[in-house]
Amino acid sequence: MDNIIVTKDIHKSFPLGNKETIEVLKGIDITVPKGKLTILKGRSGSGKTTLLNILSMLDDPTEGTFFIDGEDMTKKSMTEKEMLRRYNIGFVFQSVALIPIMNAYENVDFALKLASYEGDRDERIKEVLGIVGLGKRMNHMPAQMSGGEQQRVAIARAVAHKPKIIFADEPTGALDTASGIAVMKLFKELIEKEDITIVMTTHDPNLMQLGDMVYEMEDGMCTEVKETKDAG
Ligand SMILES: Nc1ncnc2c1ncn2[C@@H]1O[C@H](COP(=O)(O)OP(=O)(O)O)[C@@H](O)[C@H]1O
Ligand SMILES: [Mg+2]
Image (cartoon, rainbow, N blue to C red; front, side, top):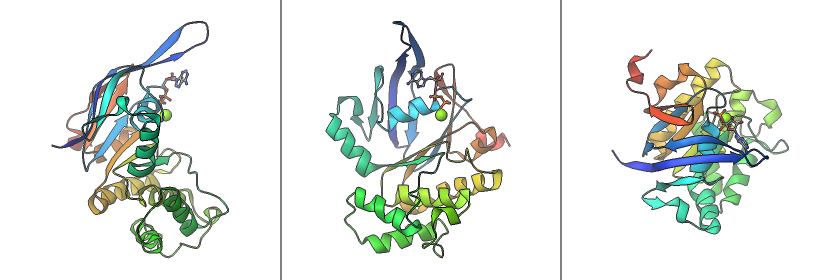
């Protein structure tokens, strides 16, 4: 299997003030298969966001390295990382950060402009809003949509510029179970249609069977959870 991300002994410590530090990640060695849905599960405070922030280059590891498409990201300059984030990565967060004064169409359009999308923007906006099931609601404002619908706009926005990897931090955390499962199914569909890799975090054990690869984070370590498909 082709791995798009490989980490080598990633550690992350944060300063606590009085010259002490807290080590949140204690040697993470994981692989993320290309074109699949990888889930990082674990209790609140287990380090999921910290790891996702490192993999998406919002933060640097204290020690260790990681590779995306075979390239060592810890050797990249700030500018190179900024470019990779802008063009190759999409983000989805728990708190949907749609722009409230823009409708669904305009929210996606804005993201495409930020990413300097070179294709036909109008065509792409209609395509991605269609994939997330909001083709008929493109003119709706965020306030006119449910939480689940807003999250689907946010997902359309994250994939619109055709990134290679989507990082989603607790994308289902603010949704009811049905909307959460709908988001997961949408992720699966995007993987098929858009040739994309998705890495998401969750603290909900019920969602893990939907992952192609599942890791559990505990005490700063990350271990692969096997046979998730049979776990029920
Ligand atoms: N900037 C920071 N400074 C100090 N401690 C932090 C910082 N960011 C996260 N932590 C600590 O790291 C641990 C893991 O946090 P986090 O990665 O957000 O966990 P999760 O996303 O799994 O809930 C927590 O104990 C948190 O308090
Ligand atoms: Mg978190």
